[in-house]
Image (cartoon, rainbow, N blue to C red):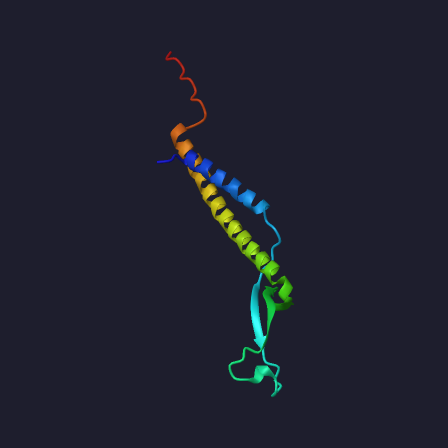
Length: 134
């Protein structure tokens, strides 16, 4: 069974690894990329035919900004780059979440280690010498 000090060392090592992962972050873009097809409404257009997908695809990036949904049209030439940015954002968020959990565990482990050390060592003050009997 690992000692509290061993647990602290292990968690500190894990935290250092997570910090390294955070420093590798590339371009980050929050949101969701959606492929859309639409119908133009003209009776003679191919999109009006039954079973037709309609015009498209057009790509929309949707995300929340200060409580409101914001949508931006993304050109088809930028779809692959945008997907990579969204994936990097999600990876970064997961590393941050894991870093917070590890940090909390580390704080608890350090507290346990200091409590165990205090119990083991007793008082840190040396006891006063007893006076000789008179």
